[in-house]
Amino acid sequence: MKINGGFDVAGGIENCMWLSSSSTSSALRRQHFLIRTLCASSTPQTSHNQMERVHCASISVPEADAEGVIRKITPVLDRTRHKGQAGRIAVIGGCREYTGAPYFTAISALKIGADLSHVFCTKDAATVIKSYSPELIVHPILEESYSVREDERETVSSYILAEVRKWLERFDCIVVGPGLGRDPFLLNCVSDIMRHARQLSIPIVIDADGLYLVTNNIDLVRGNSLAVLTPNVMEYKRLLEKVLNCDVNNDNQSEQLRLLSQKIGGVTILRKGKEDLISDAKTVTKVSTFGSPRRCGGQGDILSGSVAVFTSWARRYVMSGIPSSETSLNPLILGCVAGSVLLRKAALRAFLSQKRATLTTDIMEFLGQSLEEICPAE
Image 1: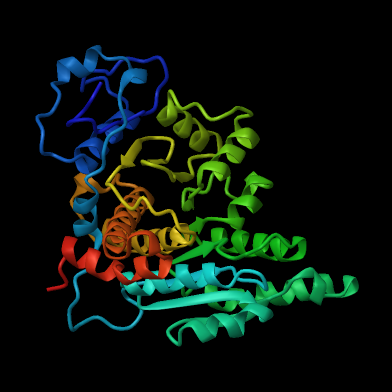
Image 2: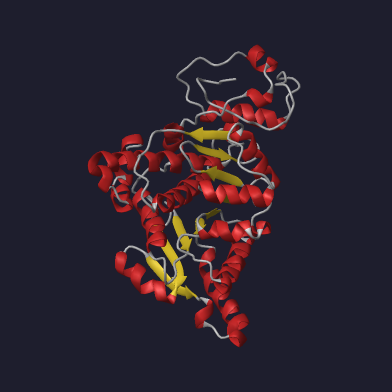
């Protein structure tokens, strides 16, 4: 069934009927509210009696009112604010081979409106990343196996965690994975950082090699309601094989995504693709705004930085005394929706300007304009 012109929910309970308001479970009430909040409201709503007769499995995925979400959660700029209040983001990634990805993530966060953006990387990567921009705060703390003797590894690992812990409490969200690489020692250190961030209830966006780490150790995120996974096609396929022991089901994508999220304990998953599908095991929504046909590398790095900023803003919005009717909103879902549509709009602007020559650096230059178009600063 289509709600509001195709806005979908694969919502929650298998083999059930939509129930009347008097007997609807709390989970379904939250589902109904999310539909009303995230759906575009330009077409007539489906009647309640029609909804009662439709099996859950037949419901199409709802299109999020993504621009409306951005306007809700983006903080107002005024003279009373001080540095840090618009977001402090940290990227855990960057090694000898990969220095561009953490830069793209961190600088995108600033271009969207975060006040401070940090990068925790290996010593080999630090000077290179610093040379890209003086705007970033770069910490050359991480180490790879080749630079640490076997008998020093426990000591070095403890030192790395201690150094990162000094900073963690300051951050509104961290991104793990861009340019991280797959060095075993480095991944073990990052696993410790992720566990500590979870103890501090810091939202964490996991992308790229961070997803490789998580796929091989699901317990790092299992049951973490403040974790967002942002897999591409191949990363999603590997997650399904690991967690659900099955292949991608293109005939029932929304329900499969919801089940995957449920199996990992309700983590939020943003499945990237022609349409970005987003689920936290309770609800499924999508963003299908047309972006760019040019698929240059690095767009996922922009997305992870965008999701981090919008998630931090959404958490503040949800905790800022909003109407009681909106308190059930998941700020991570809101952050994913906002990050997805902003990237798509910026990518389209860049493509219209550069066509086949479009690069990730071109897309980043349109982030601010695209946000201003949706939510003017003044």
